[in-house]
Length: 342
Image 1 (cartoon, rainbow, N blue to C red):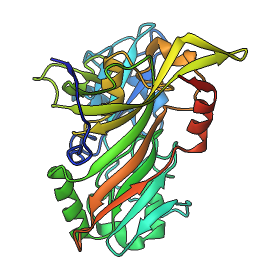
Image 2: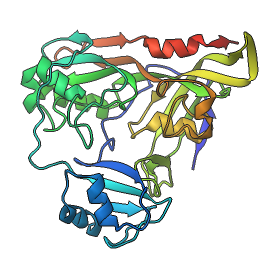
Image 3: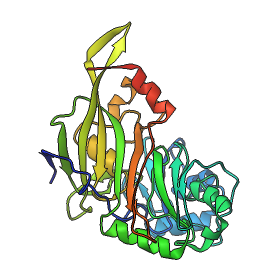
Image 4: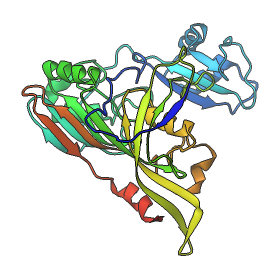
């Protein structure tokens, strides 16, 4: 069931978000591959696409149901057909160790317990399939070597995530006590996050709440989707409009091409939550290659227009309430500059 409700007031005092929740499944990552060799055996073709993995290992994945073709689990001997889409759940290598790397960081705040970092778009938060280096975790381990033993081995210090192409503020714990305290704040919904998103269409009402369960898309496992309550987890996103825009062509406003800048407040922390919810109510985020659908070409944008703009939390040691703001980066500001406010 999906509900979109008008809201009289969006109060930042009760706009909160949950813990890391189901933002990742163990140490696994899901990738998808489009078939370019019809007639090839499933296991043999996958081995050619994933040279770091042996064919016998891939056969074990297939037998265990970690490989699906168009949403179905098939045998290793299955012959691929044109148009097949393969989803593969890739486990983390057992011998993998995260290494520090001298990557520049935009540190907004730092004390003995934590870091607040303004993450650029294009940076993955922690290592995973296809992104074993160049991540935020690699960077913070170089900046603060003591983080190595804090929290999970593959994402030391990380208490929440941002998608690769989402920019903005993220919290990193520097010791176990701070990590536990921040996790409790997320669990108690005491950490408040605000995102800015530019979406297609004119959003009405100007304030509201989207309530719809989210889970893995049963056919495209790399995607999330609004699903039944039994198949997903509860998800709630509040929003309010920050501006309405139209496209401009030859110096003239194009009133049939409308856009809305939203402030989004996730009350839960599901994977791709804001992106899925906005796409589900037919206002996908501009530049979102995964959930943008046919509207993707309607406005040039270098990546998804989603930015973690504001972060409020209590210092673990003192309980003091802090708030940080990261303004829109230049790439997103330049997109807004091509539009006319209405």
